[in-house]
Length: 578
Image (cartoon, rainbow, N blue to C red; front, side, top):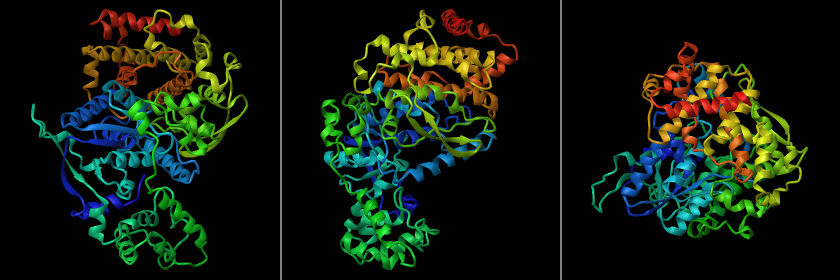
């Protein structure tokens, strides 16, 4: 996201960012950017599929630091994407980059930037438990973030360099300079604060001597997710960004208004055989993305009401009215918007055996039911996924389970609970009796685990299943603030490079869980939603598999707590007896 190289450029001009003691204020937080930052700066394991409990702890500490300093956070999370798909090529390139990262991690090489499957779900659940107000934008979040910050006269917290271009009155706080772990907190003192750096467009424009109106022109010409003049064939030298930025800013200094700069842009980018009209249209669209427009989330934060359907862009008219509130409060998956708009979907990438088919294929039948509920039987969805180490696309048919044949998307929320439950259970292939006797919140993970055991390829062996269930037991005890010392000892050992067979199997399970969670959400939660932070701890599970394959028994790992043994056996019997 953002303008490539701009963060470094501003950092090299120390007068632009000013020291700031942040306290006693609202702040609008770029949710997706912040959970990326919190996960990747907390040194959480990335090779074994995710350690979500460590991430949850980091998120809790972050928001405690804010509240200790009198800061009221309002978090906005990315939802759908730009309807015109101007940035799809950018998204496709990022997906290919993640494939390469995952492949490097699978070979034991060091990489940063790969997030695990449940990361967004865990983040939203933690925000809910902490009672931090958050909303899921129905389109890209940047405009909603800037609009709300401008309305409330408070700053934005993010690492997205696009916020150096938005003219936000109260400024922008780059997360990279936000020292929340070094907050000055004194008990009962009103002077608690977080040391950080603050950016304003005024300080930038004063430093580089351009009119503030021209900042969006600067952002568009330098290139963002929507505009790339270099790829359009214009002879601009982008290799040395600092030299280019300085040249562009000097050129912009001779103009006072946006249109004046656009009328003369050919003097900067040249003509040649290139289509100047196409370039000007692209630049105009790029400039428009930085104009702060009225948002639709203030009503949700103030009153808890869904955005007014009449104020939403036309392309969101595909959404039934009943979906607007659960989409905004984060209890429906935003990628359903892509499906309803008949746009391509890029599947997630994780560490696995890249010589085998993608782990996403295992959960495809669950997604097909999801697509069927949204589009009806027989429609097609274009999915992008990896084939070995290349990103490829394929058409996937939407299917409707027999229990869903009479359901309509517009009234899905009104369908009887038992019908919605039957649709879910039919999709994953289990009966209601399978879940009898289990804790309600573990019903969905057990049902999905049964599905995974039947559909995963290669077929999981018994130690893989046992370790997975032991991990669920461990998470359940941790959720209750209990601990099994034998398993905790395994966590404290240094994690080795992943066994790719284990990584592949568990990536398939996480994909099945993710798609099962999404289907359950679309069906308006016929099964209670589990706390995802406690479902999977990759560094533990990989070591448990090794222990079990060497002859350690599950009972010996659970002997400290009889109730944990009972829970493990109940889940194992439910799955094997099915």
